[in-house]
Amino acid sequence: MSWGTELWDQFDNLEKHTQWGIDILEKYIKFVKERTEIELSYAKQLRNLAKKYQPKKNSKEEEEYRYTACKAFLSTLNEMNDYAGQHEVISENMTSNITVELARYVQELKQERKSYFHDGRKAQQHIEICWKQLESSKRRFERDCKEADRAQQYFEKMDADINVTKADVEKARQQAQVRHQMAEDSKADYSSILQKFNHEQHEYYHTHIPNIFQKIQEMEERRIVRIGESMKTYAEVDRQVIPIIGKCLDEIVKAAESIDQKNDSQLVIEAYKSGFEPPGDIEFEDYTQPMKRTVSDNSLSNSRGEGKPELKFGGKSKGKLWPFIKKNKSPKQQKEPLSHRFNEFMTSKPKIHCFRSLKRGLSLKLGATPEDFSNLPPEQRRKKLQQKVDELNKEIQKEMDQRDAITKMKDVYLKNPQMGDPGSLDHKLTEVSQNIEKLRLEAQKFEAWLAEVEGRLPARSEQARRQSGMFDAQNPATVNSCAQDRESPDGSYTEEQSQEGEGKVLATDFDDEFDEEEPLPAIGTCKALYTFEGQNEGTISVVEGETLYVIEEDKGDGWTRIRRNEDEEGYVPTSYVEVYLDKNAKGAKTYI
Image 1 (cartoon, rainbow, N blue to C red):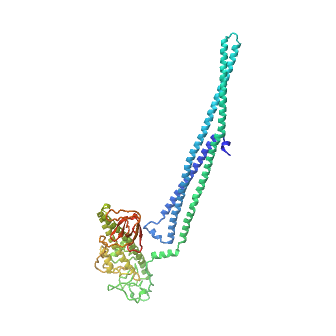
Image 2: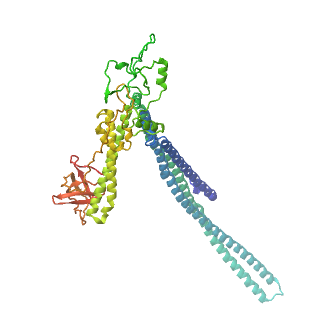
Image 3: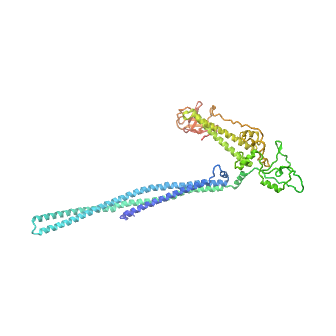
């Protein structure tokens, strides 16, 4: 069915209908646009949610994520980020494949519709003009016929009147003839215009309007097809991300299945294990007969040590006490009831026997942690010290890399003064060297404490005091004249009396960065990607495709040192060569 034949007289209704179709299309575009905004908002909320529950760096929360359950939760948060990313993909694809394309199509559709209805109105105006011409010629023909009829009647009247002169009769006859001729001409003109109008009207209703309406029908059908395709795209965009979303959900399930309760239980042991041994049996105290106390001051804790010789420390015997157990001040003091001793054991506070212990106790009350972690049980203290040593070693390596890079840059500036002032790097180089020295001394101090805990060195030996003497010299009263009575039954977790005297800091050797270097061995080869003219001092010219030896890799300044033969070597821009390093070569290292 064609609109041109069926709706030939419905021009105005077709104009309204096509405008309605464009409005429907724009409404669908608005719907998709709002959907994309919802997807973006949802993705943003998911990302914020995942970020909110991410562990904070350098906090207690980060340590908690050692447990498998927390790791699974962290994996869930990461997968939620990927899940949110898929919703962003939905928004982007809907925007590019539907919203943008339909908006462009709507503009084209409006222009096409406007041109078709412009042609239709033009045809309407033409047929209306033809109709007006026909009406005009028809009225003229009618008027001329009436004028001719009146002239004829007037002539006949004059001709019948005997009182009228012959001249008047002749004049009336000529006037009638003229009017008759004008009527004939109007008749011919009317007939011609009528034929022309009929032809134009036939063309209008059977050719022009059907063609225009047919194009409008095709345009409208294309609009309907296009909106249907957009709806399919709308569904496909969602369907494309379903596998990835399913993969995210599978990873969450996989993370949940990786939770190991036994492993988490073991981590709890490692986190809180003190290294102490459980207390021994409490000795039976016989009150049936009066007697003096014959047991030693540490009767609560040495039941397992009976018959063993006491350890000697500096010629004085020292009992092994549990923390927070008070000594008996007088050996002749009568025994207190067992319940009293037990209550005293549970409620008493540790006795602080020296200035260093006093400082440590004060720092604990103020919320500060001792630098050597001596407030922790042996096992936890060892872990903390090891962690601190590892951190310091990483910082030392970082500073050394920075020193090497600055030294290399200074060398380049010396060889190529136009690239920069070498003197401007001296202050920075000195500062980095000082930082390295400080970090090394700090690392030695913590390594000494770690060795003391692990038993590799004698407790607070002269060697350890020499390594950390620089730091202990600030508080000399804390290392002399006293020892702490906090010791476990197995002899761990204790501080022995320090030997007197002031140690010296071990000298740390530093490499001289400006000594003359021996010829460097080749650490690989390189191929020149482009021709480079080495016009500056220290550079070397290369030709595209040439193969040379690499003797020093780029350390972050953008230059690679190469050698052509024993007497010809220099620097070239790293981007001009493709480097092939020998992994087994000594000194082969990548600097980023």
